[in-house]
Length: 148
Image (tube, rainbow, N blue to C red; front, side, top):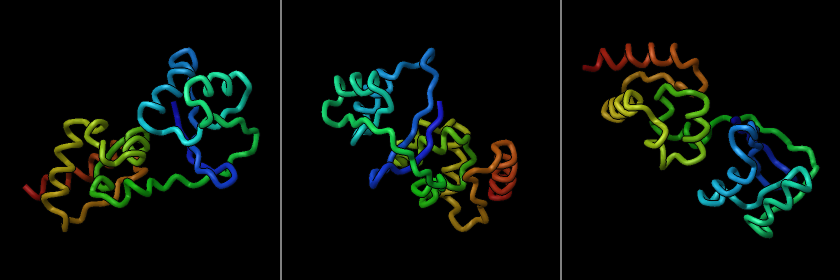
């Protein structure tokens, strides 16, 4: 599964690319509704529209308009100490969507690194957003080991 942010008209949207043999469109819409991520749901075909309407009623909107893509700069993530924690692209996308729930997506190692970042905010931590995970872990560990 992958996501990509963009705009349709003046509405901010997130395109979700998924494998329907792994997760159904219906379960995606239901999960998004439970997490409060529905306002609105743009659908791309009549079947999606009918299904989305059955779950979110008038929040379902049919649109064939092109999405204007934006560079995903992980804005929310970049405003927190989490920007110094090495993570996968999927983790960064999830955490950027809801920074308050970062603990749900971080591994125990990442949680320990975040604790060190918070304990030593003036250390020369490099920003790790978009950095290859093995390389990011190596540089972050090097800094963390010097602080002990």
